[in-house]
Length: 163
Image 1 (cartoon, rainbow, N blue to C red):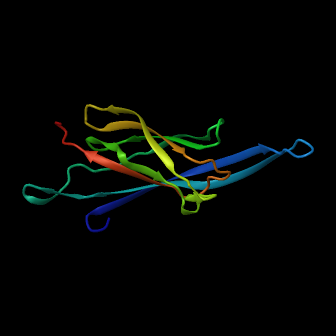
Image 2 (cartoon, one colour):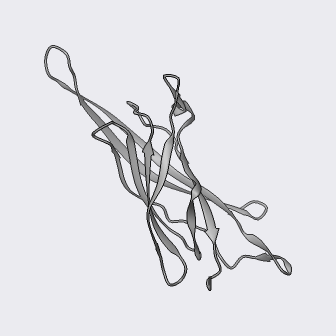
Image 3 (cartoon, rainbow, N blue to C red):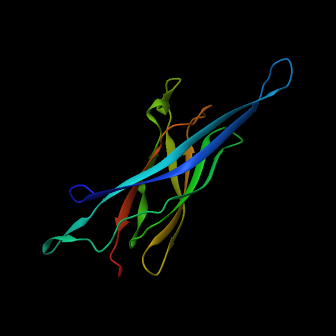
């Protein structure tokens, strides 16, 4: 907590094995194994400016990200990550303004920008106003190695419980 901002970080262990066949004179298999952590970080303001000035928020903006699937697309080799979020506040995360950022060493490969496209696949609003959302991230370029620290940025849109 720092000057009205609260920072939350969640670390999830991630194990990836890349298996490929060699194309040399005789058929053989190779594998590369990676062990890392996927880290989700977000921050939110702990105070709101209301009609009477600064007051503590009644809504704790928080997220429970849950990675459901990480794979490479068999057709083009692009990275595909599917995850779910459930807000602990009345409101939702907006697709516009939310993004997943790749590690700095992945930004340019062979002179091309490596980006990750974030798509909101499905959303359900609970009677409490909290929202369950399913997301998909797809890389726009194929890499041999996707290891690194990725940063998830979600744009919260809180709402009053009666709207």
